[in-house]
Amino acid sequence: MLNSLYEILMPLRAAKNLDKLPVNAVPAPEFLYVHLKQHEGAEAAPVVKAGDEVKAGQTIGWAMDFMSADVHAPMDGKVVGIERQPNPYGGFSSVVVIKTEGKRKPVESTPDPDYLSKSNGELLHRIRRMGIMCEGPAPPSIHSIFNPYMCPSRLVVHVGRDPLPPVDTLIVTAIDEEPIVSINQYMITRQSNDVPEAIKLMKKLSGVNGRTVLACLDTQRKEAEKAASGEAEVKIMSGRYPGTLRELTVWRLTGREIPAGASPMSVGVAVIPLRTAIAALKAVRDGIPQTSMIVTVAGDAVTPPQTVDALIGTPARDILKFCDVPEAPIKKLVFGGPIRGKSQFSFDMPLTKGVNTIVALKADKLVPIAENNCINCGACVEFCPARLQPNMLSRHCQFRVFDEIVKKHITACLECGVCGYICPSRRPMLQYFQNAKQQMKLPRKGNML
Image: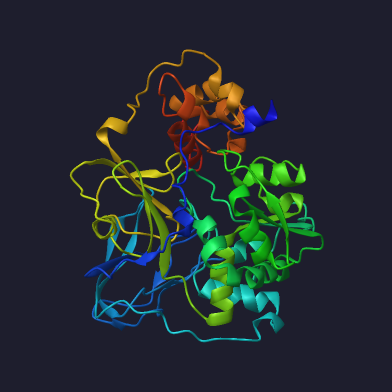
């Protein structure tokens, strides 16, 4: 019963052996559009202006609060302007437009072989300055995950909450959360030499005083056991969605349930994707900032699916062209996974740090979504991994009855999208919940906006 409740068998899978295929680098486009808000927290402040020459890896945006991180130039070029443009997640942010010069080349590294001798504060500060982020629409930064109450450069007083318990379990996951995506699987297969050091760094930063787990798929058991090198115990997990989500990964490996609106750290668990751990390692060991992303390009318009390495700020149009994907048949372009990703209105939307997948879909694969009435079938209630009542919650969200939304525990919603996926009325459930959460942050009068 638990397996049927927590793991809906989706007819979506990562392409076979995609993680074992070579990753090709997308050539630098003529212009890069680098957003200054690619993270949780405030938008980074630009430290360059139109006419400035920039080098690959140079800081072009300075983090303005503890949740944010610096932004860097992906390659050599000239700043032609700073504009306000729509970002991939429905908002607007400042964009540094860089006219590239020459061919794409690696960022110059500044190695530090003694990085493990430094304090956690120094390491977290450097990770922040290197712009290392996790994945998602508003990806959290590594330094805010491991040290949520203190910034290396200033003390943040933590008031009104119980102190976090010590971390007794560290989970480094080599399983991607959504179907089709295969980035973390690629890391365990093709960058296995960095895995032991990355795990060791995560153990130091988290201060874990118990077990360290490397979670992987059964198909990668041998690679994971070899890569772990005794730094972590290997645990095999199913790749069925939504059991791959962070909250359910914690539940399956530790039996602990994360409180609504809290992080895994609140139950003494730290969860880090393997790709993020390796990026943090390269930041502190090699001095390499986050200027590019390994991205899965998939969907029925992409034959065969591919994994590419693209510079941050590269328009989707250039990535699709490199993958020999014609634009004409594409009726929907999605940044992120097929379940929780965001539809884009333009092929010119640039790549950001939170994007790990580009999904291109043809018209015959699209399912019409409309604000149809709920038929009270109860399917969403049966399969909700957070044990909510999405049928009732979606109605309150649709009509913005905020008192009822709070009573129905919207903060416990994982935004997994399973309810909308199985809804026979094709109601946009996930969008209702996401919009309501955003609206609740705005000033309101009474129980309605």
